[in-house]
Length: 319
Length: 288
Image (cartoon, rainbow over all chains, first blue to last red; front, side, top):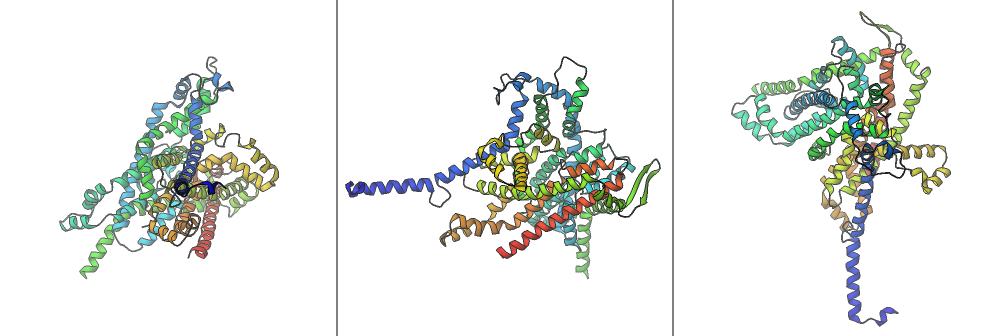
């Protein structure tokens, strides 16, 4: 009934507005309308929150004093900025010496692993030799073999050579391309060197450079992105490895994650018989967890671009 | 003649580039693999003079399945959890990758968030978080929907659902790398295929099933392998812990631990083969 009262002109205008709002809400191509975007953003934000929830929780609890923890009214924001948890956790973790030790046992194997993966990847990418396919398949198979199977013989082997408790038990496999997830790094370098053109290397070859010199002076400088990616990934994976580390390092060396695993025991050892200090509580253990991941968070904050690109560059998405 | 020698020379150089890997493979992977298989058939005793072994046939394996009640149980639990978690990880990371592939702002920020767990998730950190009960969505069991759902469902579904509810965040935390793999593949697919499909009258929904999924199919298999491998070598895995604790137990020792690790290895390989096999057969039927 309404329509009859409208003049031709008004109806036209209404039509125009409805199509405009429709276009705005639903979009022209089906994936750029307002409603669609609203859905995408809200889904991403909700899932993102679920992802970050443990970290936010950890952050909030680590600043809570005992009163705040017991007070049911305080859920997210502590009443005071309470840093004593961190002081206690700092002492329990023995942070600075542990951090130095962790860096020592993660950075050196990571460098070795990256360097060796570069050499092997280059060999696979640039040279033809018999059994190349078989060897490549073997490299991939080493990724599937769980470390637990080779762990015991390696332990026996290192024990004979008295390498248990020394960094060499991590470094030696890394130096021979058998470290943590070495296969992935070899694959990254293989794909990377395959993608860059051979022309420069051929020119250098004509000028009389030897194979090794070509590798060092031409291939390596071009592979800087792959080197950074491999180093960062192996750094993080070595850092987070605790099962093998606690087995191979024994009591001689320790890492932050291992210390975190022993947090409660160390806390009790430090504070038994000391009536002035409190018992271990959520706040303190969350502060400990926070301190142990903080170095990685800082590294990630500055280098996240490389991590994301790393997956792109690995070439598993097919070329 | 000269051609051949040049070729041979080149292949020698290539092999010399590979030599560290070949040596390493023989010393640190192939030999240990054989040696642990050998140990698994032995009773190993550690004496001051070195390791004494005694051939006991399949006794270690028999012990694992008959006497050691704990091992079969945690192995079954591991397999069950893997079978539940893997499809969820794959589907979830696919959804996230599809969302991130839309033309949205702050793409970098969201990518950073979804990859963050890969950086910080070491065994002790996750144990700590589990102890605090933050790995499940807070008080989700109290919501009416779930209450009715739990009340109405029977045993198996109930346990699966409860397991999911309690470990949801950890399961999601496993999907960082997988999201990026899917995303990289999505960004490499040709936009023109979609345009052609649209012109032929395909809706977004049809585009997803008929274009996106088939192009992503190889990546699904890659992610499947990656998920199963990382899930099974993760330090928190009870099977891994059990193997490690048996290594230093006097009554069992290296021989028994080796047998356990071989059983574990075979189980993982079987799981990989079955899941990849199923995917490949179904994929071939559907997409080729």
